[in-house]
Length: 454
Image 1 (tube, helix red, strand yellow):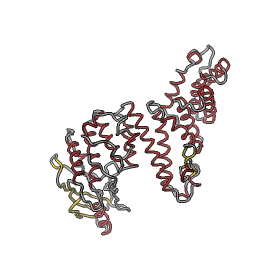
Image 2 (cartoon, rainbow, N blue to C red):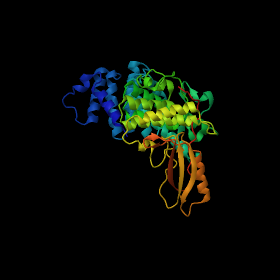
Image 3 (cartoon, rainbow, N blue to C red):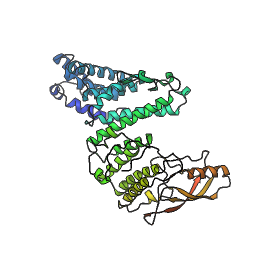
Image 4 (tube, rainbow, N blue to C red):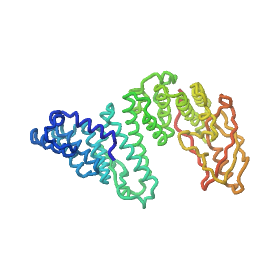
């Protein structure tokens, strides 16, 4: 499928190319069919300007788009390869221009449609360094998002499929050591040919690459100051799922309001400097909601999620000893959430199902209604710790083992503090009905990265 963004970019380029006379002033008698018209225009340019005239680049790219939309990717590749050859003749073998990046991106789409996965990987290795030189150009956003989408798709297939069931054509970076990088390019092999024991390496490299390209895509949006962008928030949240803890603490100590009045690009919070995931993504999410004038509920939720991160860090040791200084930071941020003037804070601080941390991951207490259930009552303290956990009801078929599993899971979870009467409560009582399935609930471990107490 050819994205609407790509179509707009190609048509715009074709209609404003350098040889306006050849395209804008179509001689009488040219066919109305877009494909035939482009072919005639290209032929005219070749006869009048030569086979390597730079003016050929844009009509060749537009012709390739016509072929792509018709599903003829083999012909599209012929047109794109000719366009790239003309560009190399006129601008050098490695122009690293926006036009070069757009042609590569378009070629990758056809290579992908034809199932040339190794070719796709190698072309993307050519594309990434060019895109990085033009992060101030909004046209690099769909390029980077396409690569992120490809990597996520491969990561999901590789991580969820038994090795013996992996289909051919799943290319992953599994070559160990310095041999995995050749001429600055990451080497990939068909996953079925990867050396034994490389699974952990592949997963780590793929996740790191996704985080890197997420950061670059975020940078493109930030350079255009589109703080209201939904895509910006999606990229940060995807990064949170890949790296919940994070480990960046490079900014100097200072009040959060000073940060919210600053600029991100070029600062210690810049995604190209600080990366993505964990604390840094949560802090930037607060920035986006405040600077874009988002609704009060959105601002409150961003402050609450940042506070959640500090609350988990405060209990980073296995014996759940509280770091009071970090907890004070969490408490301050929860108060900021309450100060946003939300008419109803119930969805954030007093939902029927208590919020488990981290809140951006699925709540393990959420369950699908069934005849089998266990009712459990407990209190949630201001520190997010459950106390006085007890079973208060159960279906006849619930087993003692299932009860024990549920009690154990709740005991080791951290919850968002709750409000009573509009204020954070020292202890808030809750009752949860957990519907039973084959698997007991499991809770994410709290982050264990170092802590900055600014």
